[in-house]
Structures are given as structure tokens and as C-alpha cells.
Length: 390
Ligand code: PMP
Image 1 (cartoon, rainbow, N blue to C red):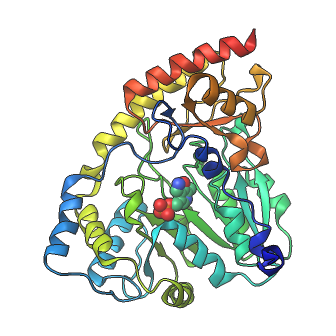
Image 2: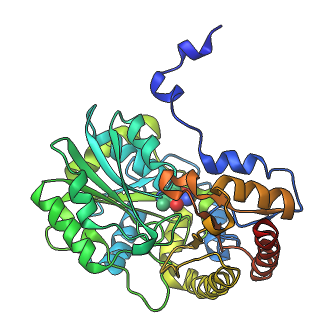
């Protein structure tokens, strides 16, 4: 059978994730030091795991409300208010999802009509453009640049706005650059959203992981923005809960109602044991991640200084757990650099191009890796850089 002709053209034409493709090369190789996959190197804190075990012991194995357990939505409301100084009604403005991944997908599907444009910034997390296309929207890329430490410039956003623009999608701190937003640019982007009557998505998945005593600022908390913002957040990064598949969306009630319709037909609800674990995570709050955050900050300091020391220019990112060094001085493309490093030194990093064309000339290194392995990986990378430069 000609399966190609049977597939939805929309799906057939989507590229596979550049990260996953690259990691097929690593699977089965125990000798590789991976600075690749973006997840914490430690398991979920024990009290959170224990809460899930306890809920299983009690036989809590049923569906929950489509919106998620009410107790969890109340806890999310408190946590979000504390974190972002914006209050959401747990009864109608919060939806518990299967990770930020699902939240993004259903938010695009709930809002986009065919041909509607979504402005997003690249380099960015791999799911943005595909999620927009799967919802029949048109992704419109605005590049962020190293000279601005990968912040999004409002002037660039303004140039990309057309009468078809419906959404601006933001993710700061950003995967893969670790970039954060200066207040002035965020305020200017908020003003553009208000002027052009646009919705803003803000993916806050790394907001707890900020360094150098920074305070996070979300666009949701700027005046006039709550009514036009979909705030997406989850448990994967700060609480080291990637495998639990738990996230949430906070937004005005009519948007949550529309997202809930997509969610109830395609997902029904997030797993109850994950929701019970999430409740415990929010009870713990910062005590669950503060030690890790401090440890990531130290690791960031080490990796940034080692990369610059070997002549790979790397700015000091304000958040997340990624660095995005420039590798152009080696004369290699991002992909050549990453494949060569894996083949010759058994160190895995992700080519910047996995995060969009604007990532050419860079690689992403995740430093949520044991400190001694970071040092070893940097020693090997330095040898590699010296060899390719000869
Ligand atoms: N957004 C960004 C920016 C991410 O980096 C990731 C995961 N790497 C996600 C969303 C998806 O997160 P989740 O595990 O909550 O689905």
C-alpha cells in the first residue's frame, strides 16, 4: 500500500524532532556523557513520590474531573498567585493537563482557525511550529539574537504583525538558550498585544530556575494582560517530574472552557496519581527545588567559564538549565560539531538547528548533569575543539 498517500498531508510533512533524531544515535551507548536531553539529573523529590504511592495504596485509581482535581486546582491557584502575582479562579480559569506539551497543543487548537498566524521566537523548544501547524495555524518566526542574549525584541515582533496575527507565543527563560526578558521589552510586547488585540501565550516551564538573585516577571502580570494571556506551566523542570506528565493552563474562563472541550475529548483528564503527586509538590513549594536551583547555578558558572575558556563564546544565561555556546570559530556547522563530538569524544550535545534555523552556529548543552560529568565533558570538548581547529 502507498501509505504516504494515505497519511494526512499536514502530519506527513511535519519534520521529526531534531532532538529525538539526534538521540537515536546515542541510545544503547553507555560510554556517552550526555549534555543532551533537557531534564533534571535527579529523580523527583521523595515526599512527592511518596504521595503518589500513598494514593495508590488507598486505591485512588479513577478518572478525575476533566478540569483536574479541585484540590489541585486550588493549590495551583495559590502557587501561581504567589509566583506571578496574578489570581485565577480554580473553578473556571485553571485546567490541569498532561504536561505543558498538551496545554500548548490544546491552547493552539482551541484558538486557531485555518490561516491564523502565530508569532513565536526561534531558537525555541521543538514543539512550537509543529503544534501551530497541527492546529492549521501559520507559524511566523521572529529570530532572537546572541547580541541581545536571546531576548525577544519588541521592534522585531512589531515587524512580524499582520492582520492575520492572532497569538504571540513566549517562552522565557527559553529552551534552548537560557535567555530571559528585560522588563522594558516585555512591556513593549504587552503594549503591542493590547494595541493589535492579540492573545499571548506564556510558557513558564523554567520560571523557577532563575539565577543571580533575579526575580521572574511574567507578561501575565503586566497591566491589562491577564485578560489576553494563556499562562502555561507545569511540574517537569523545577520539581523534576518529567515522567509524571503533569502541567496546567491558566486563562480567562471562556478560553479555559474551549481548551477543556479539546482536552475532554482527546485526553479526558491527567492521571490521578500524577495529580496527587503534583498536590504534594505544590505543598512543598520552593523547598522541593531550591537546593537544585542553587546547584544548577554553580554548574552554570562552571560550564560558562569552561566554554569561554576554550574559545567558544558563550553568554551567561539568566535561567533554565541550558547554555548555548557559539561554535562558528571551529569552522564546523552545528550538526557537524555535534556529530564529530559524539563520534570522537562520546559527548552528546544538541545542534542548535534542532531549535530552528536561527540556531545555526550554536549547540545546546544541558547542565542538569552531575557536576563531575560536566567537568569531564568540558575536558573532552576542549580536546575536540583543539583538534578541529588545527
Ligand atoms: N515547553 C518548553 C519550553 C520545554 O522545554 C518543554 C520540555 N522540554 C515543554 C514545554 C514540555 O514540557 P512538559 O514536560 O510539561 O510537557
